[in-house]
Image 1 (cartoon, rainbow, N blue to C red):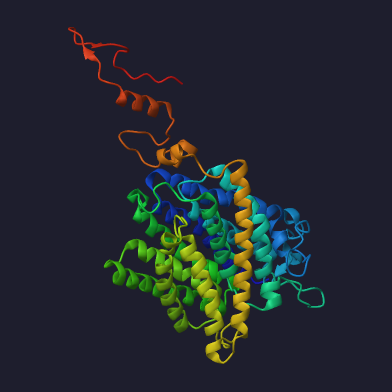
Image 2 (cartoon, rainbow, N blue to C red):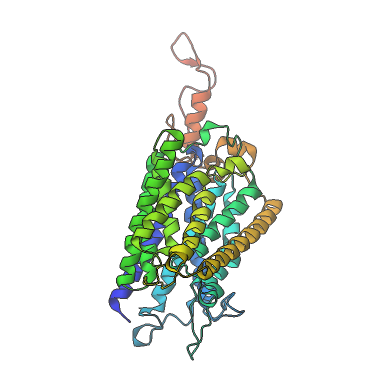
Length: 464
C-alpha cells in the first residue's frame, strides 16, 4: 500500500462526489424557476439511493468474481462490502491502494451516471417514479456495464477474469466514456421518448434557463471535480495522473471555444450557456481518451466535440424528441466522439498504449472502440425504454398537465425555490397559505366607525 496514492484516490473520490451537486446547479439553472427544486432533488436522490445500493450489492456486481464471460460480477460475493473491510497489513489492495478506497472511488461514478439521466426529463417527471427507475436502471444496467468496462481482475494464476469490453475486447475507456456518458445519454433518450414532450415544447419561451449564473457555477464545479474523475482514475499519484490532468484542462478549454465559435457564426452571439455547455462537452469527450492521446490532440478533440455538440443539441427540434437539458446532445454525442477519436489518435507512447489510425495502427482499435460504444448504447437504451415504459403504464411516470402548468416544485414537493410577493419557501406552510388567501380576498368595506365590514376583522389568523 502506498499512502500517497491512497490519499490521492480518496481526495479524487470527494471531488467526483462534488460533481453531482455541481450537476444539480448546472441542470437546476437550465430549468424554469418553478421546477428547479425538483431538478436538483433528482440529483440528490441519486446520491442517496445509489450509495446505499452500491454498498449492499452494487460494488460486488461490478467488481466481484465474474459469473458469465465478462458480463456480470457476483452480486452476493461482497454483499455489504463483506471481504473488503479488513485494515492494517492484511487489507486487500487494488494496485497500491486499499480496496475499500477503490470502493468509494467507484461509488461516486455510479452516482453521477444516474444523475446525468435526469436532465432529459426535466419539468415533467414524478419524483417517486424517477427514484424507482434509478434503482432499477443502476442495478440492471450500470452495475453490469461497469463490470464490462472497469473490471480488470485476474485469477490466482494471473489469467484475466474481468469485463468483456475493457479486458476481453481490449477497447480503451480510461474513465467512463462508455460506462458513464454513452450509458447515461442512451438512457436519457429512452426516457425522453417514454415521457413525451413538455407542454409547449419548442414554442413556449418560458422553457428557457431561469438562472444562468447557476449554470455557470455548476459547470465550474463539474470541471473542478472532473480532475478527480479523470486524473483520479490513474489510481496513483504519478505521471499518468498528471497526463490525464493536463488533457482534462486542454480539451474542455478548446471545446468551449469550439461551441462559442459555432454560436457566433450561427446566431451572432456567444452566450454564457454556450460556454458552460461547451466546457461540459469537452470534459465528456476527453474522459475515455484522457491518457490515450497527446495534449495537442486533446485540443483538436475538444474543438471537434464543442462544435459538433453545439450542432447536435438542435437535433431534438428536428427529430421531435424532448431532451430537456441536452443530455443526448452533450453526453451521448460527446461520449461517442471521445471514444471513437481514440481509434484515430491514440498514441502508442501514451500511458494507454494504444495505436490509432493516425499512428499506423490501422482500423483494429477503431473497430474495438465502435463495438464497445454500440454495445453499451443499445443495451442501455433498450433496458431504459422497457423499464421506463413499464413504470409509466403502472404507477405513471409523468405528472398531470395541471401540475406541470402549476409547477412541479409546488405540486410534487410542496415547496418553491424563491419568494415571490411575500411567499414563504414552503408552498403549504400555514403562514404562506394565510398570506396568499388574504392577498386574493377583496378588501372589506369600511363602516362609519372605521372598522372593516364583513367576515373577519382584518387580521390574519394562522391555525396550527
